Amino acid sequence: MSSIYNEAAEWITDNWSGTDDLAWRNRIVDAGYGVPSWAPENFGRGYTRDQAREVLRAFDDAGVPGGARDVAPFSEVSWLLLPGAALTDYGTAEQKERLLRPMITREWDLGCLLYSEPGAGSDLASIQTTAELSGDGENYILNGQKVWTTNGHRATFAILIARTNWDVPKHAGISLFIVPMQQDGVEVVPVRQMTGDSEFNEVFLTDAVVPAANLIGGEGNGWKVLQSALGAERRGMGEMAQVGRDTVESGENGSPASSPLFTRSDDLVEAARAADRLDDPVIVDEIMKIHTWRLTNDWTQARAKMENRSRGASPLASLGKLANSRILHGASDLEYRLLGTRGLQYDKEGDPDAYRTSYDMMMGFFNSVGGGTDQIQRNIISERVLGLPRGAQPDKGVPFRDVRKAVNRSLSGEK
Image 1 (cartoon, one colour):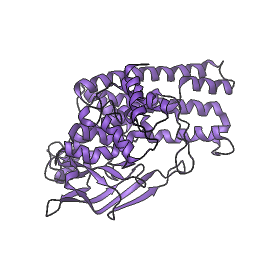
Image 2 (cartoon, rainbow, N blue to C red; image 1 turned 45 degrees about the vertical axis):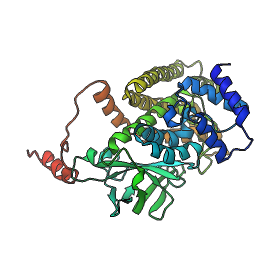
Image 3 (cartoon, rainbow, N blue to C red; image 1 turned 135 degrees about the horizontal axis):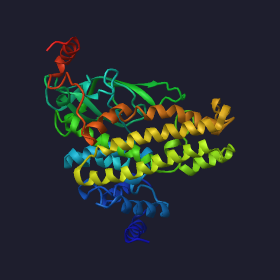
Image 4 (cartoon, rainbow, N blue to C red; image 1 turned 90 degrees about the vertical axis):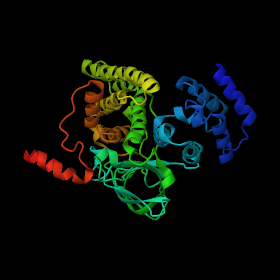
C-alpha cells in the first residue's frame, strides 16, 4: 500500500464515528480529504489525481463515505466540480468558506447550471437575463428565462450568468453568480424528453434575489469566470469516455444511467459475440475504430490535464468533449445494429438490453448539445488549438444593446 493510502486509512480509523452526518463531512473537509487534489487553500491537500484516487480507495475499503469526491465519477459530482472550478479560480476566501464548503459537505446537495436561454444557446454570450443591483447594494434582482437546465427541479443552488451591463460588448457585460434556487422568484417547469424523462427544465426568474456577496469574480467578469466551469465540464465529459459502464439507474422512469460513454471496448466485443457477429469483419472493424477513438481521447485528456496544471484551462478539453460525442454515437449505433429488430423496442421490463440501447441512442443527441455543441467545440479547436482565423464577427466591439442593428447592417452589406 502507498504512504498516501496508509495515511488516509489511519486518519479514517482515528476519526470515523460511524455516523455520516454534517459534522463528519466537515471533519473530512478540514483534513483536506474531501477534495484532496485541490490546493490546501481550496480545502484540499495538493495531491495529484492519482494520489487522490489512493485516498478514495482508502475510504472505499473502509466502507466510509465522503472522501475524495474530486475523483469520483464525473456523472456523480459534476454539480460540485463546475462551481468548484469557478470558485477555486476566482472566489474570495470568504466565498470559498461560505459557498464552496457546503457544496463539498453536501449541505447543499445538488446544483444546476442556468446558462442557456431560448435565444442564446450556441451564441451563449447573447444572454438577455438581467441582474440589477438593488438600491441598497445588498442584492441583485434577476429577471429572465433559462432553458435545458438539468436537475433544475431538484437543485439547491445554481451557477447563473446574467447581463449586468448593456452598454459594453456582449462578453464584457456578463456576470456570474451562485444563486439559491429555493425562492419565490424561481419557477421551474419540466421539459418532456423523447426518452420519457423530464430531467431538463425551463427556469423562469421573476424578481428573484441573489446576494451581491454571491457575485463571483466581480461585475463584468462573468464570461472569464464561466470558462473555468466550462473547462471543467468539457474535461469531465471527455474523461467519461475512459471509464467502464455505470449500472446505477437514474431518471424519473427508472431510465439507465449507463450509456456508451461508459461502454468499454470489451463490452462491444461481448455484444458482438452475443449477436453471433464476432466473425464479421465489418463489425470487428467498427469495434477497433471505436477503440482507437477511445485510446486517442485518453492521450488527449492526459495532454489537457498537463496543460491545465501549467497554463490554466486548456482548449484541448474541447477535443475531449468532441471525442466523447463521437464515441457515444459510434458505440450506440453499433450496439443498435447488433440488436437488429429488437432495437425497435422500448420496453424496460420486456427487453432491458434493447431498452438501454434505445435510451443510449436518444441520449447521445443530448451529449452533442449539452456542455457546448459539437459545432462550437470545432470552432474552439480551429481557433485556439489550430490557430485558424475567426469567422466574421459583425457584433465585435459593439455595445450589446446595439448588436441587432450592427448585424442587420452587416447582412445588408452596409458599412
